[in-house]
Length: 339
Image (tube, rainbow, N blue to C red; front, side, top):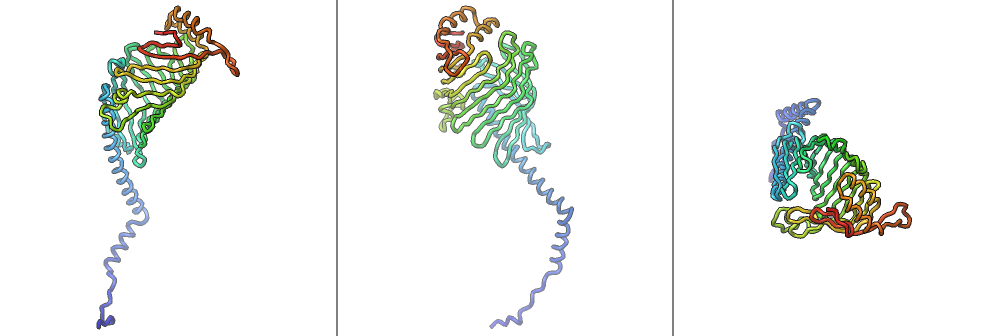
């Protein structure tokens, strides 16, 4: 039998104990704090590099999708690793619309793109100066004091803009928008848009659009088996904007609308629905002074629609209800057309 008393006794390794003791001394106190900080910093740096690489692929995919729908896109990417944000700087961004949409051109000096690596939410900073070129206005400059676009992993989009101001041309002097907020869910198609405190430079029109909001649902959006680019596929599949509610307060004019809207293959808007209108004829008189509508159109509207005006119980302002439509650059209120 094995005699356990004759087994050699295991002695502790003095050298190993001394080495572990020296290591524990070195990792204690200030040196330990520095070592821990270095490890955390390296991990954060790796995370930033991962986020930047992922964002580059996502930005390319988004601009590729935009370009596939007929828009012209150009931009330059610059790493923001030096700022330790894990994001990107997009410089000299240029977006040009197709000719059938008017061929407008939007330029931005710098757009900042960042991401939350834990929630996968992408944040896009839109503050700064922008240039807009259109056939009707020419070159215009405007600034956004605070702008943010957030895209969540659950396919939600949130846009927030604050204090948009026109810098040029002179005809736009005084134009500004206090707040813009927009939300969209690609999962169910729900959308909403609200614009507050829009100041207009026109002397003939009411100077302030106090409030404008629209909400509803985009139907047949983002089909799982789509073959064409997103916007093109939605239009080809007869996608609709179901407008559940639309309100505007542009005193003395106010309106509440509901209906549907869609776009054709050339991105031309078509809309139809019903609405309740307040102060409509006051607005027409101002539009006539601004030469936006003709005197004959104003007279026809007052004759055809004037007989519908009444004061609803519980309200103090006269109003009328009528159908409306918009097609081929012509607005219809009831049977009156405003081309």
